[in-house]
Image (cartoon, rainbow, N blue to C red):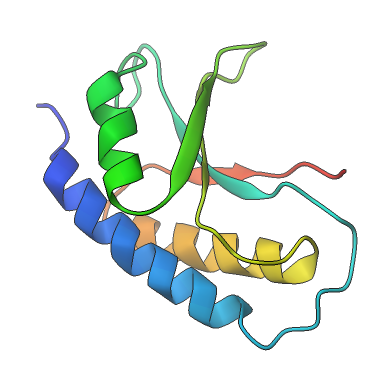
Length: 114
């Protein structure tokens, strides 16, 4: 069964709000990073292959994304727009991930230091 992309867009909107709320007011300290949400694509995954429909559903939520297909990790790196580059960015994306997981989505984190 194909994932409900309308539900994904709705849940991502709520995850964005929760993540931005969790990050607000935190001092922008710690290592500069590119920490983001990550949705795996490929055989045996919830979303199958790279998809323009999936990408559009993510972008309709207000998040930005790009597909990476390098190495062993293939999928979408998703930024929820936390206006920080250190710990608040990590905290916001981790909060969003937890909300999405609680709604049944197979998401993980993309941790990357600058």
